[in-house]
Image (cartoon, rainbow, N blue to C red):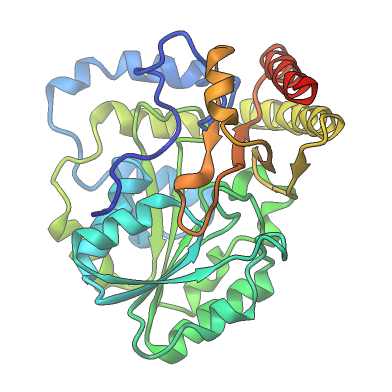
Length: 352
């Protein structure tokens, strides 16, 4: 049985905790989004727009993708499950480790999962063996770029090879770009332009991380295959994107200054935090996302909890052993508390 709800961000079981386990923008939801949600409360007396017309129009302008190729959902997870239910793959290919929701969605339709393990010795970088594993008996392929939890980023040439191999093998690619906006020069890596010539892939994105809107639940995706989008709409719940979420999304796309200012700060804080971790002799992998993936001592999560801090223990990902962790990049005062807690814990380990 697939494990259920194994993500970070569970502040409800740990009230008052300083949460480094979820990778949302640490500077909080934009003021304009909060105001839009409040103003939308009166509209919430009505059913939501099932087509999300205003939101899709705003997304088309922002992302440079035509409206008919856009679908919205109650978070990225809603779209993952909807896509799997619509296509009902029999055999799917995943990296190990990668985002847990793919496995859970595939298990819901009793799909056989083939894992291609990423090597610790090779820095968890995806290699040609993943591409070679895309054979004619594979119906669906999931690829997260940058990957979660490692933050490792594949270049466009590599992803294009995956896409072409899928086309040649008649497999459908689900490309998760939920963290791509956090990297340097995302336009050099996104595969949006390939929607014009490839109908065999779905590109997944979300508002969750970029705008700190995890609790509102709003994701979206692009696909050139009309049948896939229609089949998704047929199996997904009607009115799955609330009035409040749709209004929040439209407002968020106007927050250009917020995005630039907060992303610049996140970059500075990530460099600061990496330096602190390296001084503590913790091995950090070259994550390109807004989180850091590192190797540390066993039971570090439990020891951090005793210090009032939650980090993501990655040992429950497929192909991951104990001793690997992921931490979000947060604001300076919060990052300082994490660094102090880790120094206290690790110095205590050395004294033993």
